[in-house]
Length: 486
Image (cartoon, rainbow, N blue to C red):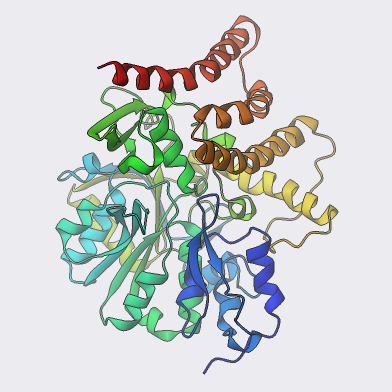
């Protein structure tokens, strides 16, 4: 039996302080009493029942949480896993970096960007290196379990391809990791950076996970969203939160830049099944920099690309690639086995990739790195100044006293993330979308002022934003009136 935890306060610091990312690995630890549940804001969180004593908490829990004091950091994990790799401060230890896409089949068309993630999974399966793949797929929401997406196990190449695309939605791994413990096989798993880190930490505690999970694939991550994000976008499209069946966050739009994708929702309006599609640019609050519906833990993470994964895949937001609506990937290879698979794919022209330096990968995600490195240093400083517990990070605290613009931008980002959860709960409780848009509007305008063009262009942008804030609730109201009149 596992030894009891020495200081239960350490894990409570993570949970009570809002630093739980909801990965569920602590709940998957052998004999763990921790359970996962949605909180009042639509975020999956770890929960310790009040009846649980300190002696009933396994010591391993402190070592598997990616935000706990007892966990190894990404540099320590990467150094042990990839001793042959070159170290880079942005992408971690690595063997090769690439930009490009899948040329064969419909991998690229099905994926959010270039299709490399699903292609790698399919290759591992085709070559007999894995029996099963663990990744996020759609599920049918029910009254007792409203989740739109969850981790699932794919047992064929067809099932792998059916679970393509990015899901900006809260998910957790406790269920699927229990399945791995109970079901022999060779697995590959796909997750965001902190989830992959947590699995690596779990494998250090329970050898069965190191034996069975053979490959780890990470998706580049800006931040994780609560369920409120999908509900907010669907509501703007006329589908109420309780009437959503499924959503597609990354529907590609032909002949548009890759970042000009659309949001599609399937659900019901007045009992009638519908499918609505809107450009993300036409939906309110979709600027990723605003950080609406963001987990607090994401503001205390310094891993953008997934430094503990065997291969990391993200969007190639770079000139020469972003203009292609079909999508392109930025790729970091760390495992020698995958290095061979990728090289063979290039040689056979099944994938079209060009080798680049790590700096190009970092440039493709420069906004994320600014927020997770420079911005994080400021957030750490604020936490320390307030004598608040916060996770230990590889970034050092910094006051940024000589840059008031920088401080104001990051103060506003933190404030927007916080109030978005609060106003969204009130909007849902009152069934008034305008409560949310009105609640965040003042902070949103202040934030956008720092990025707006100058002169008449700036006035035009602010005028359009102000009009949108007024018209958004009326748009939903007019839609209801139109339906009622028929």
